Length: 251
Image 1 (tube, rainbow, N blue to C red):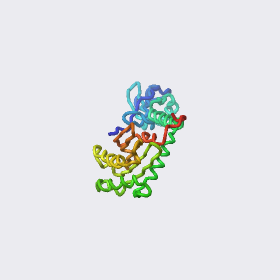
Image 2 (tube, helix red, strand yellow; image 1 turned 120 degrees about the vertical axis):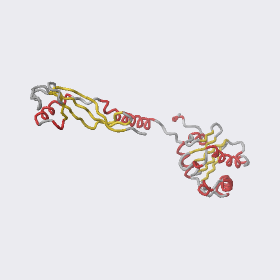
Image 3 (cartoon, rainbow, N blue to C red; image 1 turned 135 degrees about the horizontal axis):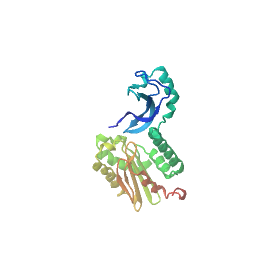
């Protein structure tokens, strides 16, 4: 639950010279208290939203709100209200937000993007739903198993595939758009299906395997020679090693 609303705090008190109480008619007895209103979330001030004033006669103790000030008191209040300064913490939320934006901008400018992320993104865009024996025989065989074992709930007709071999490494990518519908313990069966093919193909003998299985948007299952994850947001960077070492300028 989010608690938000408005509050007010006293930001200043001052006497109004040459004023007269409209009730007891005593002169120079008016003292004004000014309250600064601010919006808050979880009681953290976000930004100021106005002021209100209350006048009290120090002689008869009668109190009136700003809307009840007579024309003369209004005039004198306007001439003196600059004595009540709004505290900086009324802008605390805006200040914190500004610092967050500045920090994020600085980090974005100073941090160097790993160029291997673009290579992985490019390969993800090459994934297709119907690989053939001629175009990608490994993906074709993986698709055959998924078509036989995947349930209608996750609709294997929507799956996409890509296999690449480079030197002593192999990359296998599968996209299962509705994978999040599967319980976490059951998702590993997708990795098992991929391994059933790779373990029985001579093309993968002696090669390091980099397997990534993504949902509709993000990687969920990843398996590499040094890393394995089953998470709603697995670390995609673990697949970058397929493309070689990180450039020296990026380390």
